[in-house]
Amino acid sequence: QVQLVESGGGLVHAGGSLRLSCAASGRIFSYYTMGWYRQTPGNERELVATISETNTRYGDFVKGRFTISRDNAKNALYLHMNSLKAEGTSVYYCNFHHDVSDPLRTDYWGQGIQDTVSS
Image (cartoon, rainbow, N blue to C red):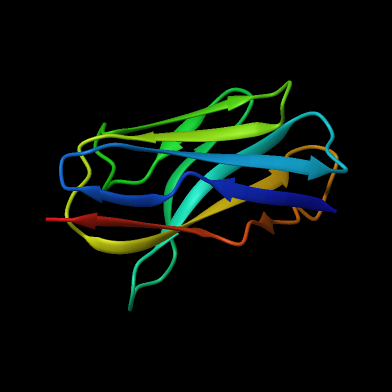
């Protein structure tokens, strides 16, 4: 089992910045991918960004405004969000799965953290 705890959400004005963090704990082995997904009211959960040992991937809507990073020594994940758009409230979820040691590629999710971008 892997536990994920997000932090760093809040309220910001359009054009501002936020930094999200996710701390992973539990049975963590080498070679894993972590990522951020978000859900806005009335919409499905969508990819924000993922990062593996060798690759990063971003959702189309990010368009160079966000940066995902990780600290393997701390099993931590970060998301720096700049130039935020006035899209109201979103819930960001931290995601984790092992790339090698788990053939089922079990997905673990955090509880979610809310951020609101006002105009």
